[in-house]
Length: 259
Length: 299
Image (cartoon, rainbow over all chains, first blue to last red):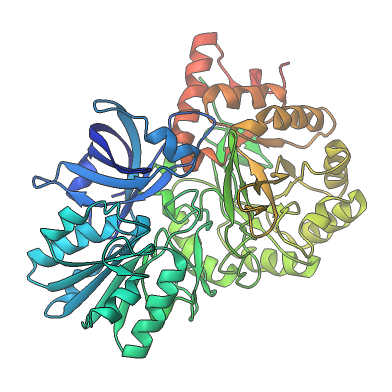
């Protein structure tokens, strides 16, 4: 069940320049699934729309969600000022998430680029729980390797940095090629050029790829049709080649979308 | 206390409706708010065929509101009648189907199909700012608007609401044209045409360059336009534009609206419609208002 709910901030810290980690106490943690997201509403009345933020982690007793986000615009910069104990309104849980059953018995490559890194943590954790073998490649701009230690507990981790200050110099694809990473399934979240490269890579290797997309959103529940992505086939909802990222996504099999 | 209002013979249990395009076909919000508490549901625009809509980004936040340039993506009237309308019929709420088209024929095709449905009324979108061909053009020329209204009224077996654009020199003249064409009611305002520029990337934020501006920031403009129109026409006026609370709704009623719609604020709180309905009742209680009609056009 989706709803707008009040949540309490349990802790809030900066992980790297502009990157924040927020733990919120919310009932939504019970249902949260890897790849899903929540909307965080700014409090300033001039900023009305919720900010879609991916779920990075869920605590052991499923009472808290961890949201790791980049304070890039006015809304997220406001959120970055919230202190532990403060209340915040969330809309959630939103989106489809990754279908873990499809990854059972397979070797899964997890790719996270930039602010696409956080949602891969919860996925790595849940895949480990179900006994699925993973290798994770994280792509950063530089050696501010936020969340790397958390990933180390869940998966084998390789690093790519654009400036070459840690791991392989270049993209996550460059790191995969340099380290001869192989697998059956790819799951990826990151900027659009990375996702296009992942889609192409998976096509060439004959692998299944699941990619998590983002787009400017308003409602988050499929009503406004603001956040669509082009699709190869006609979509279920509107019967056109555009499908809603907030409901049918954000996770899509790469071959389904035309990005 | 009476909160019932009547538009073209259709009774609404309260004056709170949803603004087209902000509530999908009701299904999307049905798990988050009780649709039975609504006076009426106005659906997202329905065309005679599926429409793709515009490229993304389609939405942008602006101070106190948002811009949208969805471009009326919709599945077309056939899917709507097969899937969405039967869903809405389960609720005890009149359904007003918003109809869009590029040509008068397209509007009429949709209306003809819906004539045999359980839809209570039609709202004709002659004011979408985001569709290049037609749409807004029908709502920016009084003569064309009158002719379009006449053509639709000639075949419609249900009451017709014409939804007016605020992007005109005189919205009063447009309302009078709709009335002259036989409209049963008018609704206003559709969104104001706006633009946002990303100064870092030196480009437009919306792929469509321009988009419809909505949200609490537009309310004073909307209230003024509702006031102007309500004092010019004899048909009922449905007011909308930035309504977030019961107090906002009361302003529109006092300006002369018989009913009101909640739009953008559905995105901010899916319970907004219920809260607005409660807020209206609370106001009436506080002010000792027995009948909501005492408020309509009282200023």
